[in-house]
Each structure stands twice: as C-alpha cells, then as structure tokens.
Length: 272
Image 1: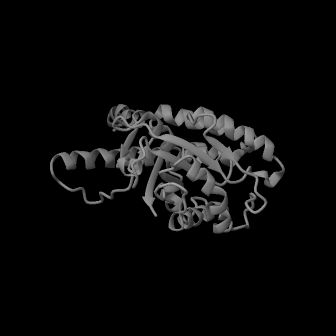
Image 2: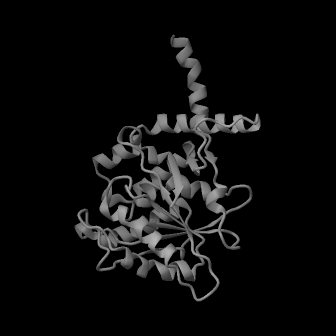
Image 3: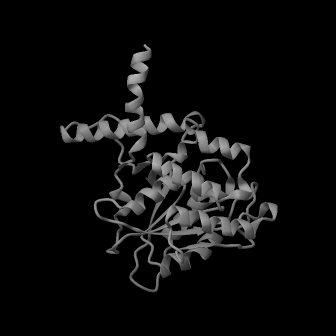
C-alpha cells in the first residue's frame, strides 16, 4: 500500500506541474474582426483579480495557438470600506504587474455610487455609464467578470454581470464596433470551492481524458464547451505572489484561501 502511494506521487506532481486549458478559443473569438482579441477583466474590488481570476489571466497572456490577447483591467471601486482606498489602489497596481497586465491597461475607479459595501447592490445603469467609455475607447471584444452568484455572494460582485449584460444589450458606439461578448466565471458549490489541489488534479485529468476521447472520435459524456483554465505549479506561485501584494488584506482566512481555494487553480467560464 505504501509502495502504491509512493508510486502515485510523481503522477500527482506531474498533473500539478503543467497547466491545462480547454475551449479557450471561444473566449478569443469575437463577433467583429478585431485582432488580436482585446479582453476587459471587470472586477469589483482590488484583490479580486488575484483571488478569483489569476488562472485565466496568466494562461491568456501565455498565448493560445499563437494568439496572445490584449488584457485590460477595470476595477469599479478602490475597496475603501475600511478607509484604505489609496493603499489598495497601489496594491492593485503591484498585483497586476506581477500577473503581467501592462501599465496603462488597468484602471481603478472611486465612484460615489460604486463604493465597496457588503450590503449594497450596484445599479446596472451606473455600471454601464462608467464602463462604456473604457469599452469603446479600447475596442474591447469581450468582458470577463463574475457570474450572478459572485463566487463569494458579495452583492458588489453579483452586480457586475447585470451591468455588463445591460451594456451589451444597449451597446452604442460612434464607430462600427461590435458589442462585446460577456463571459462569467462559474461559481461552484461550497465543498468543491475549497478543494484546491484535488480540484486541479481532477480537472486536468478530465481535460486530458476529453482530449483523448476527441482524438478517438468519441464524445466525452460531460464534455461541455465551457472555456476552462487550470494552473500549474509555477502559475500558482505567481498567483500567491500577486495576492501577497495586497498586504493590507492578508488576514488569516485569506491565507487559508490561498491554500484551499479552487480559484487559485481552476477557472471555468460561461457566456451570458
């Protein structure tokens, strides 16, 4: 039994070491002709990009089939709930630099109606009003944001997909720019949300099995077309570094998040 467990260690480590992706081309394909794709990460607070979206950011910036999209980031509040807004703005800039998002392609807002508040749902029309200029001026082809559960159920998170959808449905541009597609990060149930390492191994195994089935002309039973990004060990380390850049937010439960959260390793997306 001990020998079997020891024999499994190299296999598990190999699964953890290498990143895996699936159906990434769906996110990279726009309805217009913009090349390369220009993707906007829409978040609510500084540190969202690290705790939830890092596997996607790091993988996209590595490129897929020779396509490296331009990544932009727009954070709708500076996280000033505890009076640390200015500090958190700088922490966000440091974190995005670690993740590879270029200077001049990320912004953080401090709007009176979009303040960090765990009891407040943001108005979709206000969200549209503030994000429309960034979308049009940067010719954004797709918006990446939370889903309607917001991963942590924070009402600010849950407000973002409603705002992004409202923008897409009522898109107005002074050019021939096509309305951006809207992709949301899938919220998983509570238990798998905190099984980070095992989630990474399991998801990589599923992806490899589906790819093998596709080569053999067999359709995998649970083969959804959802884009999926699963980090390797080096990507996990970069994600951890980006989280630690948010020094004002590093309390005990966030350290536990770094150890156990699925979103340190796995991102799955659906189009709204």
